[in-house]
Amino acid sequence: MTQLVWNGLFVGSFYALVALGYSMVYGIIKLLNFAHGDLYMLGAFVGFAILGAAGGVSPAMTLPVLLAVLVATMAGTGLAGVALERIAYRPLRHAPRLSLLITAVGASFALEYGMRAGAGADPRVYPVRLDGASFEVLGARVTLQQLVLIGLAVVLMAGLNLLVTRTREGRAMRAIALDPRTSRLMGIDVDAVISRTFFIGSALAGAAGVMAGAYYGKIDFLMGFLIGLKAFTAAVIGGIGNIPGTMLGGLLLGLLESFGTFWLGGEWRDVFAFGVLILFLTVRPTGLLGERVVERV
Amino acid sequence: MTTTGQPRLLGTDKPPTLVSRLMDNRWAGLAGLLVAVLAPFVIATPYALSVMTSAAIFVMLAAGLNIVVGYCGLLDLGYVAFFAVGAYTAGVLTTRVGLPLLATVPAVLVVTVIAGVVIGAPTLRLRSDYLAIVTLGFGEIIRITANNLDVTGGPSGIYGIPSLTANPVVFYYVTVAVVALAVLGAARLGRSRMGRAWRFIREDEDAAEAMGVHTYKVKLAAYIAGAVWGGLAGVLFAAHLSAISPTSFTFLQSALVLMAVVLGGMGSIPGVVVGAVVISLLPEFLRDLADYRFFLFGVLLIVVMLVRPQGLWPARSKEALK
Image (cartoon, rainbow over all chains, first blue to last red; front, side, top):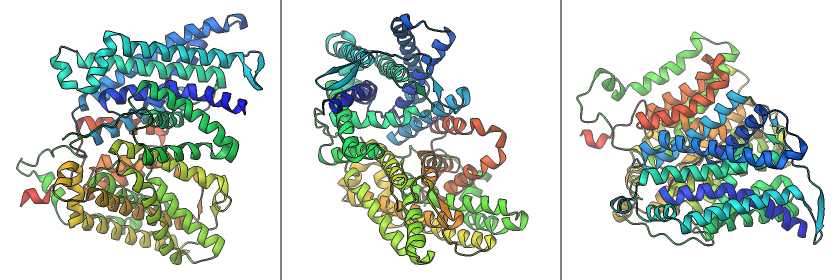
């Protein structure tokens, strides 16, 4: 029982990390960035490339090296997210929503199969494995690496929350989410803030990618597809556009999946997750912590 | 949210050029059909026939998705789910129950309509971008379910589905006839009262609602029509290959159909047909580029949206010309 809860929380923290980028971008410019899951994949591959270029890693230095790689990868995927926004999304910001969605699908496709053309279709084995001793907490088997990864996820999310609620930058983001035109009149550089939002969201996805690579040990070019969908589900459960809600949604989805797998069997896990998504959209489309948005004409 | 769907069409106020006059020609459809009918006289190896039959089925899929995306402006990213529902319904009923293929068609119609209602009813009330991702999830649900159930044969799928005829040439012509009817039907639907309501919703859903269009019902109708087209194409697909498995119904397939619709021109029947033929035949001519094909498709989607969002063969508003 506690094992199920722990597994759920662990997977959920990954979902939350990826879902945050989705949620931030959606909150500010109301765009579903389909390519977000692929930025997670990109992060895993960038980390892989850096580790490969650095040569072998001595076992004693695994954690510091991994942290350094994490920071470098976050910068890399963040820039990729900014480039994506500049090339594919910004010219279409005032175009019909359908065009923007189709562009996002195209971007996702280009990233996935561009990576396949560049790195090959076969899964790659991550050069770093976090091997840690496991110990028992309240009957659940917990490994040190899980604790480290969850700790990292919590630090990143807390930092993001501080950024959005306490800084000038965060205030600008929230203002744009409410009303981009008025924000521009108030002297906010809307384009720059949106760029930085993409940077932060993509960097978080990249961090999750490296962490997943180091934990699961295997990466491939389609790994972002499913987690992109799951992250969206998490964002919807919590309330898309709402940052604490998205974190809650990620953890909740992890827990639901963990128990769903236990009851129905692993092969139905994804069906269960998407079933939850459809149920939530039917019963409470604003999510747990989201506010009802009135459509204005 | 004020507008969905296509931006203002370019070129409608310019004098017609030779190309645009050719594109608007009412005989273009018949010419296309003629090309399809004559193609086996040019090349009729079994492989070429098989490719051409697949291309025709793909045209039917694109025509169905065009009802949902092109006419009504609803982005469906799991369209292949209906294709799978049709193919599996036909496959299960022929191999497990022993019905002849034609007898499964009413059952396929019923099942696809139910599938369309089940997925459309809860989501069509929501914002259009939610619909996109829910349909994506639905596509995965169908594929995983087919992969897990025993009655659908699990990962290895169903094989030994009886075809309509043993002769591939005859089957090709049957397919072309069915697809031609389907394309014609989709075009007629687009010009009907319902079709006008669809395009109204695409251009401005709030205005449509204010003018008395029951947007929810009308959107559901578009969704169900798309589902039926996809399901029937699935029956053809099952009969053509005689074996189906979950790997035929991945997101990649949905994206390719969407690609055909977007490339050809959303809402434009000739554009969608040409787009589907190009997308399905291109791999045959670009074998060397196999690795880069999908990458190029992705880039092409972005470029088309940035540079020519109306597609290669755009729809022209008949009302405006009169």
